[in-house]
Image (cartoon, rainbow, N blue to C red; front, side):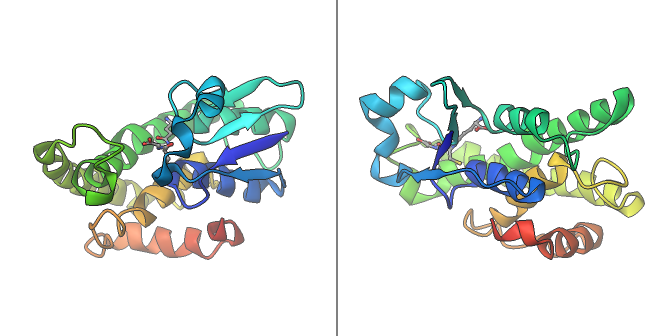
Amino acid sequence: MRIIETRKAPNPRRVGIFLAEKGLEVPREERNLMAGDLKCDAFSKLNPWQRVPVLVLDDGRVISESVAICRYFEEVCPEPPLLGTGSVGKAEVEMWNRRMELGLFNAVASVFRHLHPKMAHLEVPQVEVWGQTNKAKVQLELAHLDERLAESTFIAGGDYSIADITAQVAIDFMKPAGLGAPDAFANVMRWHREVSARPSAKA
Ligand SMILES: N[C@@H](CCC(=O)N[C@@H](CS)C(=O)NCC(=O)O)C(=O)O
């Protein structure tokens, strides 16, 4: 089994943190996405969408999409549960993770992809107005998150979950996206300090 990734990139980092929380070590193969390593035929056969991370199983089957890869590892290594427990708990983690991914994470990524000059060869065309629009969306998502974290230790409730991982990676990615830190949101900052102190944050 191996994971193909660009280690510094946010989606592979989500899987890296997930594995660190599980205490799992999986061999990693580095590809430089900025240098076009994902555009070659060999990688495109693994993932026609030309995105990392990709998990290649020992029998040759391939799983891409960060959450799908995390689901695989949750099944093979259920402890500690990071996708919730019980019917309501699992649904709540799914709800919060989708909110974090479709809202905050995608908004930060859109700012980076559409405004950063280094992304011009990968995000074609870069649409400046879309990048700018997403700056406001990031603030709106942070405001929602701040309200949630005023009443909850972690994003999906009392237990750390994949929703925390998704939001943590999104917030850490605000800096390279030119968005700074979410200083105006005290509850987000409290939670961010706590998740950043976990050993998995080094992933
Ligand atoms: N929905 C995918 C997104 C994967 C993705 O966009 N990965 C980025 C790195 S963070 C990538 O491979 N980018 C290559 C490119 O933009 O060409 C997932 O969750 O894994």
